[in-house]
Amino acid sequence: MRFQRSSTGEVVALDDRHKLGAGGEARIFIWPRDESLVAKIWHKPTLERNRKVRVMHANPPSDPMAGQSHHSIAWPCDLLHLPGRADYLVGFLMPRVVGMRPIGEFAHPRTRREKCPLFNSFYLHRTARNLATALRAIHERGYVVGDLNESNVLVAETALVTLVDTDSFQVWDAEAGKTYRCRVGKPEYTPPELQGKRFPDVDRAPEHDRFGLAVLLFQLLMEGTHPFAGVFQGRGDPPPLEQRIAAGHFAFAGDPRVPYAPAPTAPPYQLLFPGLRDLFQRCFLDGHFRPSLRPDPQSWQWMIEEAESHLVSCWANAQHVYGDHLSECPWCARAQLLGGRDPFPSPEAVKAGEHLRPPPKASPSLPGARSGTTRSRRPVPLPPPIPSSGSGPRTSPSGPGRRPRPLLGDWNDWAWVGAFFAGLTVISAYSFHWRGNPASFLLGLLSLMTGIVGEAKSQRPEIDGRGKWLARSAIAIGLGGVLWGMLGSY
Image 1: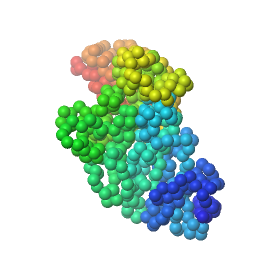
Image 2: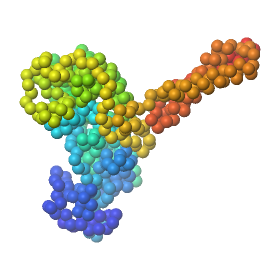
Image 3: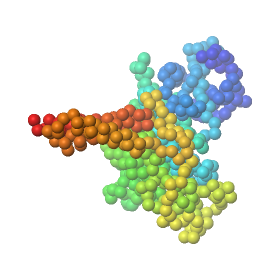
Image 4: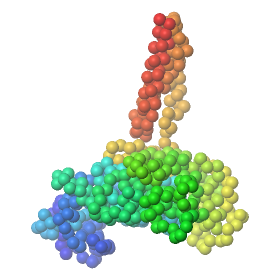
């Protein structure tokens, strides 16, 4: 069948030779003139799909990885119609996704060990950051994913992320004053307030996506464990997952009123960086009654970045990467718990094929099975850097072993602050006779200089405004102290 491209007018014939697959609503073809693109051709074109895709094509989100030769959002980049029928769309073109797999294959240790065994916890954190950044870009443009789940998030072995099935997103048509709703959803990623409702009848909101994002991030960082899955401790048959979500029964909350306990094979909740645990609690507990309290993608992006800066590796296996808030390597203990099946096998074990062998019996003598292994801060291979969205979220260095700069800078910054402070003190000593309060003056001057430096640092891209109010408070206090020191005796 022949199709015409709207932007160039070229007519291309597509047949089974170009077909990549088919689903319930459309077929996917390689675009012969440019194999970096694929064509999605609907089985039954409708006026609603026609208008929805036109709105999407005219208002694309700012792709945070546009400068990295990667598409983190498979957005419609051109329109397709029958030759001579520009008013009647039958599909669209979008970037082709190659060499990527569903995010669930990286979250679950068995499939990750089989298909990407060297994808360690650092890469899992970076994947989480990239996912949060892509969703942030979508929300900033006014779109809502709606059906955010493990099947429409694809991940590469470099931790890059691509959101697909974008034509199912909820789209607001400002010109027509109409919302094109997302008509589908998976219960295990649906927030409690939407459980049991018909999705074609519901307008989705960003806080609904925030729940699905938190579930995906929890699974990614907790070995595929769903936050509402656990061992039922009540009477009768355990309720399905959607009922647990509707009731707000977060299995890792530690609340005795919740009739569930984490499964014995689930990783310990303390494995997560404390700040990440706080965000999960905000989403699944506070957000249960007030959805607006659920953390937005930007909050996740910043907190995961902070968690990354605290990752260290085990001396016994450099692939065992974990937070420095832990006193012992959790992955060594987990490998022993799983009967020797290491969630993150070493390169030597992978090279020898040991990660694919049947699990041996659990034994305390297994290599790396000690729960008391100490950590060393050996360098960890870094995935690609975090992208930035259109509004300029913070970026981090991408060089091996480098960390984001601390909020208040390093010792070089404080060295020149001290020199400047000492110089002003000497000048001030000769300028008046200290009739006021010298101690108040000196402390005020120090507070003033600290606030000025903090304000300057808060403007840096890697800081992105954090700490500015603390800096401005220091400036105000410093000015008050200086004035009181100079004039206090009058």
